[in-house]
Length: 191
Image 1 (cartoon, one colour):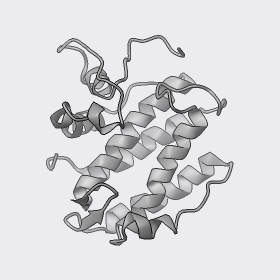
Image 2 (cartoon, helix red, strand yellow; image 1 turned 45 degrees about the horizontal axis):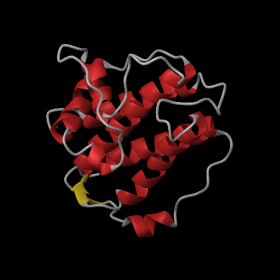
Image 3 (tube, helix red, strand yellow; image 1 turned 90 degrees about the horizontal axis):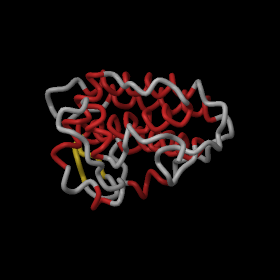
Image 4 (cartoon, rainbow, N blue to C red; image 1 turned 90 degrees about the vertical axis):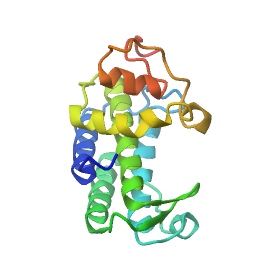
């Protein structure tokens, strides 16, 4: 995980998400993440960005909670604002500093890798939902794989992911990565 330029990957992940977000026309459309429609998926990704700047200052999640603002209906503008704020916070943070998350205390570098991974996977969800290009940046996929592959046995148990999908060992890395998170790139969509 440490061999990657996570700051550059964060920029790439946000650019990839932004491109798909610009193609949204139906906010109520279903997504591969069956708990959310497009609006809810985008709200989740934006909400995660709101936490970044507060948590990187050393606040606990309880302290940061009070700083979060409700999102307006203009989710594209909200994304631009919170993406930029998070990007700036990542660039200013010491990568070995502690971050107090709800479930653990990790380094900034670990939190950054987690956030990049979340945005990357949800970029694919959004792309699939809006009929956009589903192909993610190869370096981004490789880096996110380095985060998720070692957690293969615990991803489903975390409650954050559906059961892994069986795919061939020689399937493209992006397909294998998404399969780890319960997403089947071969499945017809929606449905």
